[in-house]
Length: 442
DNA sequence: TAGCCGTGGCG
DNA sequence: TCGCCAAGGCT
Image (cartoon, rainbow, N blue to C red; front, top):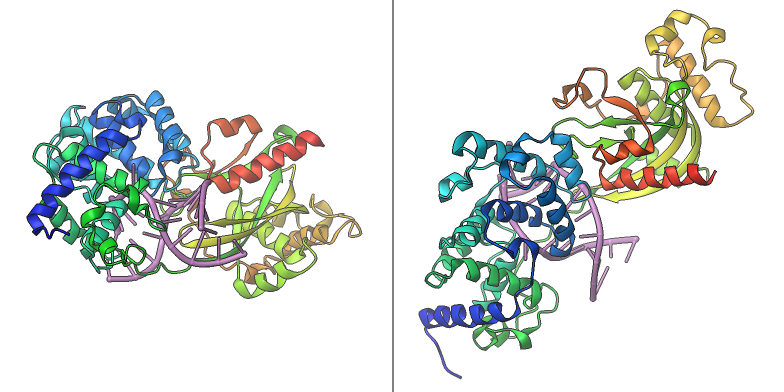
């Protein structure tokens, strides 16, 4: 067993890794050429996202937005639509903001210096290094999760790779490892090694091009490195949503709304829903009875106070869990009837009596949900919503969305075909597909 | 620094 | 079912 110096190890590492990479590298759409725009788009899409997932999105995106200019001038909703289902939607918004920066600051030509690239919206240390090295072959490290794992194992480093300071340290180390003139392939090879061989769970050391001098393997620690502190568990939220069916001119359509321009799922469309206080939700959700009147009342009240709409929850539709990185949504969906007159709370007050309200005269024998609707109408007349205690969330400012065309269209009745143009997060995509399918069968 | 920000696959 | 993980960045 030969002992190599640190410099000899680095030298050997580069040679073996590059030879291996040229032999096994995958044929990926963004490796067709070194067009910096394509590299940029691919690197943004690949953030926290698997290669197999990205491939079809990348091809569709490049077809629709083949140049920086086309992307910069596109409506944001079209960009989000192309990102639908990929997640982390601020990436798409930042990418387009970056494209606009390229148009304004660089005459539509992709910047070529490290500082200019790093200044683009949504481009951090990793993505900057990836673009500079892959597109321009500049010797700048691109340290992602793969590289941190691969390098931590090779040198048997005990640093916690969840800490930002560790990434800085590894960047300095990797920078000294880049073979002369080979930055483009070396950086990609490091990531390829992490993706194909030096995997998190069960590294395939026998196929590794640098196994002879990998300290983790020599010490039998390849399964315990790298060190990574655990992520916090996602908090649980119980939510009630409504599929409000339109009537009259909106017959056959469903009520959707656009989320605010900031925060979770920014700018995306959704079915209206509201957070339910934990204590109550625990009891109500565990009941055998799906159609809990209190839950129907909660979403009806939300639509009333938030959007001035009166709706009548009619029946339970389905329950659906959805897990984000940091939140778990336990959702219950109700089908609801919309009021044909689009009666507002204010107008309800002006009617002055139950008899003149479209929600009056409901046959209380039909279901307890209709009692809810009747109760809501009565609340409207009294001006004291009795289900307010259920709703555990401050109203979101849906009027603050800069993408809206007017102050009144945060809500919209849409037909199934309208979903082709509006971006929805996967959760609501699934529910709406299930809903349209149920209508088709009925 | 730590929390926010999606989604799907896998053991 | 559960936890971890995947070519991170922003605040």
